[in-house]
Image (cartoon, rainbow, N blue to C red; front, side, top):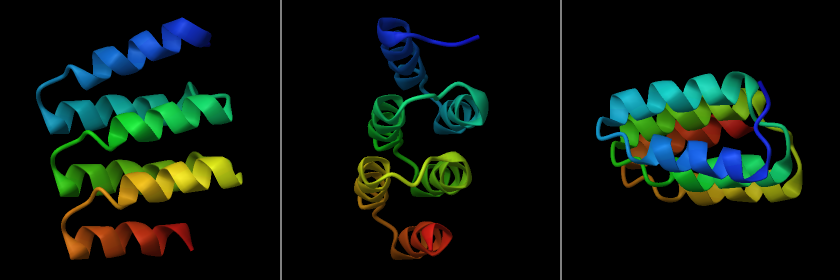
Length: 100
């Protein structure tokens, strides 16, 4: 189905409350696959992805996102902001290679 307005925000909040980074990432990947329709939803999703603790898992989700996201300036900026929250130089590099 399609999520409108508040329902999408609630969905992101519930994903955010998952303890396991691994599980959180799996849910984000499903979301990236089909549910995100607007730039605002993409940006909100990127902000959620920023909160993943594991650099490795965060990197994987962002690399998945690159293949699906629209290349609008706003979404790309949100993507880059999320990537900058990765502490590991290796994982950051892996993600930034994916966007080129």
